[in-house]
Amino acid sequence: MNTFALSPIATVKNIRAEIEDDNWGAVVSVIELDPSFGEEAMFEVEGFSHVEIFFLFHRVEDTKIETGARHPRNNKNWPKVGIFAQRGKNRPNRLGATICKVIKREERNLFVQGLDAIDGTPVLDIKPVMKEFLPREDVTQPAWATELMKKYWGSE
Image (cartoon, rainbow, N blue to C red; front, side, top):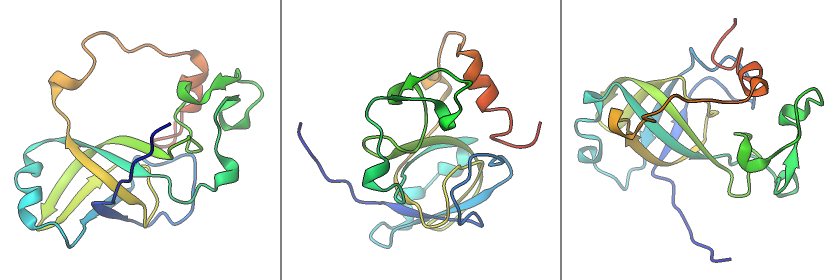
């Protein structure tokens, strides 16, 4: 398998210091661009209602990485599914991706709501969300995924 290196382009700043599974919807985060990037790298990003943030689950230990199947959140009531059929943090490359609401931009800082990344998380990329890149068909998912997500963004 080939390997490659990525360098963070920014860092997440917010009030969530601990890894938690639920209640991310109201969390406001600041994406602080690395000093190696000028403010122009963020020009006009605030013209989009949403951005997709790609980040690294940097606190996942090597021994916790999953490469096969497991019960999501270790809940035996849910089926055992492959790591690529779930969005858990213990992924082989530790990559996370979340579509977040843009609140505002101030120079090299982008304020977003609903980013499920903890304070200090390295950001690998920021992409604007464009309707044309969203699914053109209805999105479907298993019942266990709907149950898992009930409190993810906030209380029921």
